[in-house]
Image 1 (cartoon, rainbow, N blue to C red):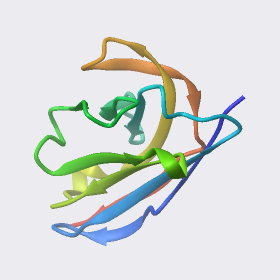
Image 2: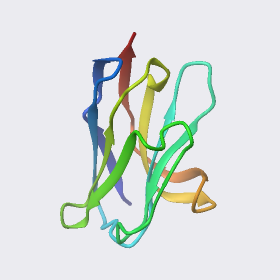
Image 3: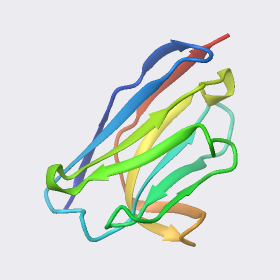
Length: 123
């Protein structure tokens, strides 16, 4: 089984940036899509971004398109999420995921999840 561990979350002021990392262990993830989802209190889980096994194809949720960038380094079995121009509405628990479920451009969820890393954006 694969294990996913997120890091890089924290508290940042609006307009600032954070870079999240997701380290995979247990098996390689170079052949499969990986993604990021987020969930704020009282709200449904939201798709943020996904990236193909090669790293050549990426998809983004409408709310983050143009501000966030997903990337991966398969040699390190790691995926990243660079978050720029952060807004208070970006505040959420961010989950790394693999074995995605649903369409490629808008996955509904995943079969394998990390524990999440908290991102809090102050006004």
